[in-house]
Amino acid sequence: MNVKQWDLITAKYVASAVKSEQYPLPALEEIAFIGRSNVGKSSLINSLTRCRSLARVSGSPGKTQTLNFYELCAKRMLGEAEERRIFHLVDLPGYGFARTAKDNREQWSAFISKYLENSEHLKLVFQLVDIRHKPMESDIACYHWLMDCHRPTIVVLTKADKLSKSAAMAQKELFKRELGLDDSRIITYSSTAHTMRNELINRLMEYID
View 1 (cartoon, helix red, strand yellow):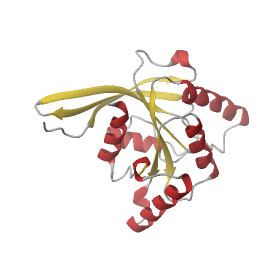
View 2: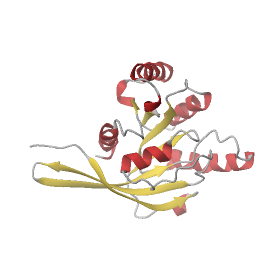
View 3: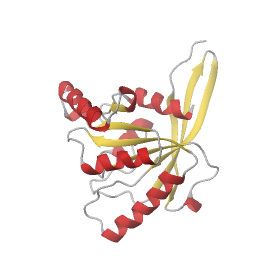
View 4: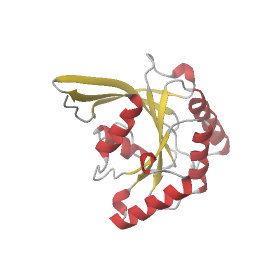
């Protein structure tokens, strides 16, 4: 049977939440995105879904202050038959927001922790990191926190178009060494050129599928 790759065909915003009672119903399988503020998370989500204004892009760090749920539909062809899967993409607030008051940071950290530690529907976390920098302490701490939560995690090195191909490869190898990753758990991405879009979609569908 001829099996084609998955693609995302629809995406829509469904809810914002800071506690479990606000999570959208019916519950669906979830893929979450987390990263430092200004890492390019909203741009990547818009690139992935091909919806330019689905997630708001802001130059102000810490703009996302809630768990934002989006309903996505993926499709592929199995020979002559069509298969579709509907799931939630969850956009988590950025960590490392320097301009935010301490009490807000603690409040946000609490509801992010509760979601990551307790969600029964979370299948995979994409941790976004700016490829132009070496692993920051907050990136390393977040990664180990996700490991402690026993959450499957793939590191996405964003803004890959800002470096030459050789420099991007060198940075990827650095992150692999620092975090103990193999190639299945790290990927580079450019939201401008949309490079690796199909690869990222098919990786996430391995966890949904």
